Each structure stands twice: as C-alpha cells, then as structure tokens.
Image (cartoon, rainbow, N blue to C red):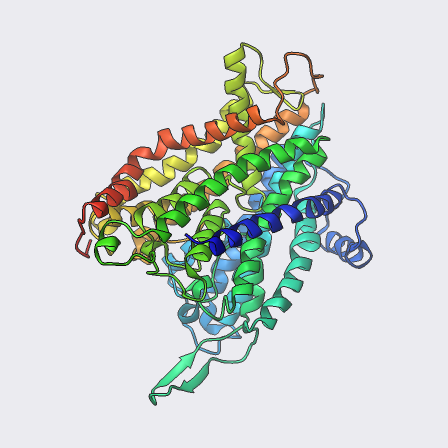
Amino acid sequence: MTTNGWIQIALYCAVVLALVKPLGAYMTRVFNGERTFLSPVLAPIERGLYRVAGIDARQEQTWLGYAGGMIVFNLLGFVLLYAILRLQAVLPYNPAEQSAVAPDLAFNTSTSFVTNTNWQSYGGETTLSYLSQMLGLTHQNFVSAASGIAVAVALIRGFARASTKTLGSFWVDMTRATLYVLLPICIVFTLFLVSQGMPQTLGGYVDATTLEGAKQTIAVGPVASQVAIKMLGTNGGGFFNANAAHPFENPTALSNYLQMISIFVIGAALTNVFGRMVGDERQGWAILAAMGLLFVAGVAVTYWAEANATGVLSQLGLTGGNMEGKETRFGIAASALFAVITTAASCGAVNAMHDSFTALGGLIPLINMQLGEVIIGGVGAGLYGMLIFVIVAIFVAGLMVGRTPEYLGKKIEAKEVKMAMLGILCLPLMMLGFTALATVVSAGLAGPANAGPHGFSEILYAYTSAAANNGSAFGGLTANTLFYNSTLAIGMLVGRFFVKIPVLAIAGSLAAKKTVPASAGTFPTHGGLFIGLLVGVVLIMGGLTFFPSLALGPIVEHFAAVAGQTFATGG
C-alpha cells in the first residue's frame, strides 16, 4: 500500500460526499414535481410524453397499481429486447453481420438488462450489432435504472406520507428519473468520454495492419453513449467483452476516475433525497454513514490484500503486490477501489479481472453482493435495500427495549417485518440454492475453469452476482450454456422483482399509517448508536447466512495459499 493509493481513495470519497447534497436537492425537486433549472426545456417534452402515452400526471396509484405498472412495463421491455436480439441478423446497423442471438442467450441477456443486472454471457463486439447495443441494451440501461429510482421514491413517500393510499405514479416517477436525472447527466458525460478518446461512431469495424504485418480487425461503434449510462445507472453492461478494462471503454486514468464517481453519485444522493422528503436530513446522513463505514472497511481490506503478496505469491518473490489481471495504467489502488465500488453498487462494470484477485481480495466483492448491495447500492435499489435492513434493525431495537418499534413516526408492525424478511431471504435462496445445484450436476460442474475452492468461488460468485443484480463475473466460468443461461436468468428475476414488490407493499402499508409524535421513549435514528446497530444487523444477517459458503470458497483458498497449496486447472 502506498500514500498515493490512499490519497486516491480519500479524494474519491470526498468528491462523492461533496456531490450528495446538491444532487439530492435537485432530485428532491424533480420528484416533488417542482420547477428546476431544466424545466423550461424539459417540461414541454414531459407533458408531450404523457399526452402520447395517455397518462394523467395528476392521477396517483396505490402500491398495487404502482407495482402493476412496474411489472407490465418491464415485461414489455423484455419482449422488445428479446425480439431485437433474435431478429438481429435481418435488422439494420449490423456492419459486422452478426447472426441472430441463440434463444437461451437471448433469454438470459434480455432478463439481465431488464433487471438492471447486465450479466453478459457473451462478448459484445463478437455477438451484438450496433442496433442491439443502442436500441436494445442502452435503452434498457436507462429505463431499468429509472425503474429502480422510482421504487425508491415510492418507498420514501411511504415514510413521508400519512393516512393515504397512494404512493405517486410509476409512469411519472420513471419519466422524470429518465428525463430530468439520467439523460442530462449522460449527455454531458458522453461528450467527456469522447474527449478522452472513447469511440462514438456508426462506422464499421476498422481493419489495420500491425507492425508484424498481421491483419487485425478493431471493433468500434457507439461506445461512449452506452458507457455513460452503464456507469451512471449502475448497469455495468460493457460494449466490449473486457468491459472497463478495455482501452476503448476506459481510455485514461481520468475517465476511470469519473466512471467510478458516476457509479456512486446517484445512489449516495438518494439518501439525501430520503432525508429531505421525510423532513429530517439527518436521517439520510445516518443511512449514508452506515453505508460509508461498510464501504471504507471493504476498500481497506481489498487494497491491503492486493497490495501485499502472501502465500504462493510471496514464495515466487512477487513482493510488489498482485498485478495479475489488472491494467498497469490503473494499478493496484484504482483496481481495488473499482472492484469494491462496482460490487457495493449493483453496477458490475470491471476494470480488472476479479478471478485474478487474491482470495481475500475477491472475498470483499462477494460479501458486498451477498449483503444485498446496500452499501450505496444500485440507483434506487441500494436505498430501498438498506431501508429494509432499517426496518429489521428497528424491530430488533424494539424487542430489546420492550416497546413497539417506530421509525420516523411510523409503527413497524408484523406486515412490514414480514415483507422485509421476504425481500431479504429471496436473495440467499437464489444465490446458495443454485450454487448448490451447480456443484452437484454435470452441467454445472462443466462451467468452472479451476478446481478446488477457486472453482467453487467462480460458481458462487456467478449466482451471487445474478441474484444481487450486479452482473460482474469472477471470470473463468463458461456461462454461455443452456444450464447457466436459464438458472442465472431465474436468479436475476427473483433478485429484482421479489425485492421490489415487497418494498412497494411496505410503502403502501406505511403510507396508510398515521404519524405518531416522538416521545421520551422513541429510539433516535440519526445518531451513532443507530448507525452502529444498522451496520451490525447488516453484517450479522449476512454473516450468519453466507459464512459457510464463503468458508468453502475464498476463505479456505486463502489458507491454502498461505500454506503454499495450489490446485490444478480444470472442472
């Protein structure tokens, strides 16, 4: 570890924190329907969209109506994307003449991008046409991110409102999230990325002659526009197979830095939106503090693990740290930081190969996802995921003091706790259930490239990434098979919608409750005690659930490496 590395990490945290309040204030105005500096330009467009779609912006929905709109919209998006991928060969903007995507891969990819997971069992430059990348994937990057933000805003209204049945309109919230938040930032971000050397063209692939005289085809395309929303919307789906490690997706150290900031900025700012909309900004800062403690701890462990060669690496004389799988232009500090950011948020973009991290370095990205990606998390998903844990923490606090648990003046009762637990428990069911299946059937065992605990980690990471809607891969797993495409897709669907629907049910239940005035016995939820309780609940629930599986994978691999033991390549 170096002073320069720690300065990079500290500067990153400082910039994200500095953006929380101004962006949070702006988004609060957007979702409250108030005028913003972009309203003169965007408000007429917004009204035009409602007229075309037949939407009455003043008509609000109950939680069931909100959930129904969300499900129908995502279902139609899935059908559209699946059709584009299957008909790719006969559609325009296909200069490389890519063939139609196979049915199981098209099913997996459509599910992946609709659920904001962006898991990729394919190489983008060798599989997809420009039209599929633009109309299919980039479009879904916007609306899947907007859908997550909308659900988070609906849950915030559940806490903020009293004695009402409505939570707002899914159609209005999603439109405003796209039009006022995602699109303007992405336009500016795209122009910046182009200035750094990122391609943005509809021209065909470029043929070049190398210095050795060999012929090489260089893939290009409308890259910058997709990268901007893949990062800002915590999507992670790369235009190229190597994702943000590819020089065309991440040309410079500055582009790498801005991409990392964009992954966190909306998720962090939504905590401020929460505080503002419930009338107490301290509540938002408390949630962000809990997220921040977990994030800094994860970065410290990962950076330490990658910067200090141990076990076999030490025996080989590699005392400068583990550079395997990392870009030399980014180095260990920026690679470790990126890995923790992308798995703390449900982004999944990578600038280094996690399969090549040390055992403990790869352990933290796994834990980040297994905790439900509530450490900032995906846009919207991180906040409502952490608020689920808040409900559980408040329930635990109520049990300890023998008082009906309350949060922001709302009594937390059986319905809210049951819905919270449903949202929490569906994730380990998918992560651990499918991992167990894949380790005992031949179709699953054919996937990992490594034997021993590392091979197990490759399988565990894949299903964890899918159910957590992250999309990053450990690497080394051959996932483009009928077995993995199908089971991973199921994990993505459950991990997205079996969390969203309980969240909306909680929001509807809370909105209908009366607000109870604070009393001398009310547990304060903006101080250090609450932050510690929340962090403890997140870690204990994650530890009790996932420690056995982690012990079989990265933990035992670490101790084996310290002892100098290696495992042969092969399933």
